[in-house]
Length: 283
Image 1 (cartoon, rainbow, N blue to C red):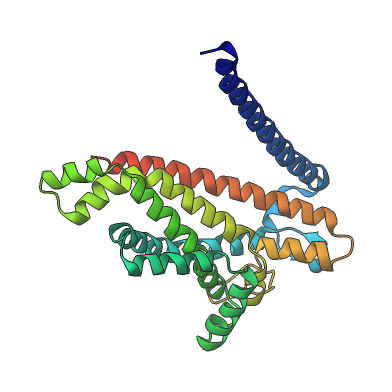
Image 2: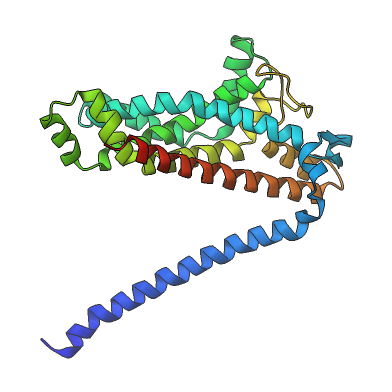
């Protein structure tokens, strides 16, 4: 074999590696550019008062404390409702992966995953707010977001369960372990890191959602009194400041920084909790 034929694959491999590094560097630069722009434009409004007070004067004064509480309540409701449903649905799909019904359900989930958020907002407004009589409320917003993130959770958890080596479940079955004990004590801990990724993706979509919450959770900026009280999410507040309130651009950027910080904190907590739970549940 000639030296030229040996150098060909090495050259193509070096080219592919260089392209990957260039794309990775470009993505990092874009992310740093966005974060830097937010910090430069919005860091000036950050203060303890900004993080604890409710907005005043249509958002030109005050802070985002009440909006943080409303956002956390909405996201917590969405995850608490969608995660159990998504987990058990994913278990059934993973167990019946080749059935016609499972293929049909997966197709429906993929379609739902591509539905625009404004459509979910219209559905939530008509069903949860009007038909069920919940009105503009945190509960209606959380239920709507649960419907939105459910396809992401189901598909991610299903792939996580299917990625677990079958030898683990077979070894547990050979020892006489029941099906649900195998799932809970063997399969789930092994799949938990990937399941945490699905939760993170769902939380990220829920935190960034605007259109669906405008139609369901409402615009009220005070501290919520309960699940049936209306509450404005941070993403809705950022949209309102940027589009409807003259002279509030800096506060919109500051609110965006708070939203990103909230997302990073929640993601870190989810990953740490998944790691500890996996270590505790592992046999």
